[in-house]
Length: 236
Image (tube, rainbow, N blue to C red; front, top):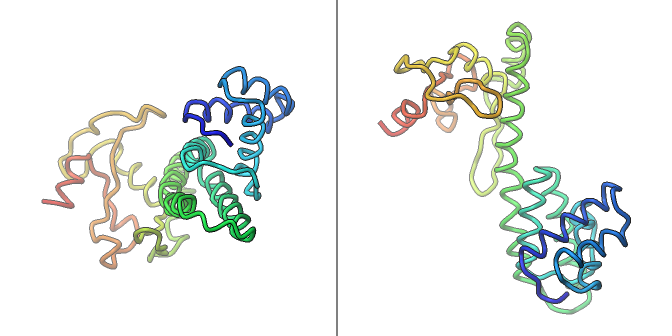
């Protein structure tokens, strides 16, 4: 594939997704991508098929530049979260293996890209998933939320990615925020602002005994703090 800019990749990506969701035929998506990006018909067709492979987690055989790979993985991660980036990295791994099996040499650049996105697949997307779980827990009646407090056990599971993280119980976070009722449990001031997405008071849930030091992921070991008090708890 001829070298194309990140902006051209974004244009083709948009029309490829319209094809994948059934809003355009493959030919319509290709023609729109050519018109919108200015790249050749052949390059647009190849890139559209690459987007399909990345979205579906399936091997693609068209060549892919490092810059285009970075742009596409960033877009897929933003649009489709954990499942999307998991599929994209899987497809990229299969693409790399395909070329290595053809005895066309290894592809260290693409390998490095896949490896850089692998931690994000399990860390950044985990935080995004936790945030969604907390919102869902906060919408439940308090009685139902409290039933779920011990569900995950007092000791959180850990997972090693680029660093070690603890898989926190969303019910503990949601209940700690509900208990605080918008007031910092350290300084007793109201939350400094409301969350733009749902209008709830912005507080952060802190573990009094850190999980990394053996603290339990329980309501008794949690407190809802304003950002300033949270920093003070950590750094004094």
